[in-house]
Amino acid sequence: MTKISFGLVVYNEQNLIRRCLESIKDVADEIILVHDGECADKTLEIAREFTDKVHVRTRQGGSDPHRIFILEQAQNDWVFMIDADEFLSDKLKNFLQHDTLDRTLGAYAFKWPLWDGERYVTASNYRPCLFNRSKAWMIGLHNFSIHTVGKTQKVDCILEHQPKQSKVAWGRFSGQLRNRIDRDAAYFSKGLSNLEKFNADLIPADFQDWYKRYLNHPVFYSYFNFVYYLLGSLKNTWKDGWYGFIISMQIAVYQYKLAKRINSLKKNQY
Image (tube, rainbow, N blue to C red):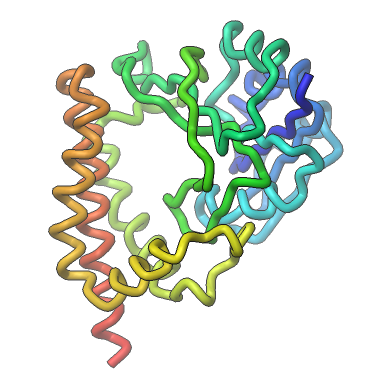
């Protein structure tokens, strides 16, 4: 059986973390947990019941920049990134325990339904979360997932996802948007050369060129990305009806406002 490292980035998750760790303890060959800044509850105490690889790192206000650290620390070829509000379904656990992972792939994606606080309201979206370290690359941005130079294979197993609050509530999204945009635009504006990286030699040249164009022409990309991400998301979520439309709009509005904020930061530099 292929050995798998599990990586978690958490922030004061004492009410959810045990459910997640219980679901992976019999599957994980290694568990690496990063707390985003100082812990104010019992999250670390619970985590240390399951692993001694518990790290408290400087507060970033999000999980993605810490995932580079997890990829660097992992002792196994495959890394499963999981959040505290997620846990393995029985079918997914069985897949991980008994299926041999294809080393020619870059990643595996599993069904990732969204929760409204009481029930799942989507069924069509998949989330890449199991990565081949030798084919993965990442840069230290918020809301920037791990990328790979290999193909991603979808698997019909559910990664259960039951947060404390709905992820598809428009009001909640819009209320958080300003702080997220300010944070993410500040990171993005640093420029690629100033960002932390994992497997930097795998970053495609066309991505590097795109990043430079984006910083040079953020106003253009505010409109282009709105349309691009809206249509791209709808392609995958239209079967989920109204909730699928809300998700697509959230993604598109985020991309629009991010580019606008980057443009404002750029003006302030001159």
